[in-house]
Image 1: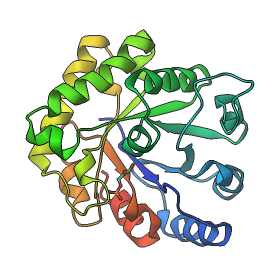
Image 2: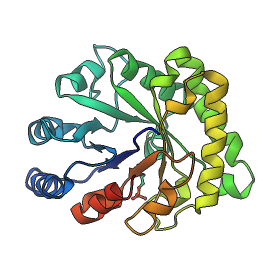
Image 3: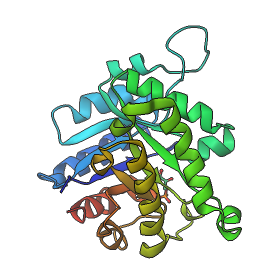
Length: 247
Ligand code: 13P
């Protein structure tokens, strides 16, 4: 069985001093984890993370990447720049970027493509809003979001990570039930299987109010290969406990 992946998404949280305390706390309690571990941090802290995490069992991740290679794109950060700071993963299409920055499925797909071209693993986030779930559109929405990435990336699709994050479960303390989560993960796995013979090696993470109390149950589901953790990744003890339950 493949090792699970637990990725923290710090979102727009952190400070030089606070990051150092958090990372030192994580490294002190980490030991040799049974899973892969990553921290997706604000880009301005990538250099700090590269220094703090160098040689450790925690990989560095970013939260966004430009779809462009280089040039006149003020405010953007390229895949090549992320590479210079040892970035192993990058989130693309997080619901907060889809919502607040109007990112379309096509843009998310081209960001994933740029990451792959730079040798960085895109963590492609998909998920339905509460209104979409209540309208019975969950499958349609997540399949449409993933289809765009599959269409643009062809056979490279086996190199991505997918994160299912129901928007209504993010930061709300409302987790999807294990049945709800597993059901959507199975749908995504089937879609990936239709696209590549290597779908079983693709990590499909669950995200949305994952915490120390509910992680083990979610991670025990057959198609849940890890977690994308927001709030609980900002506290060393909570994040370590999630990591310890990813067997
Ligand atoms: P929370 O764990 O805070 O709900 O955030 C989930 C998330 O959006 C991770 O990307």
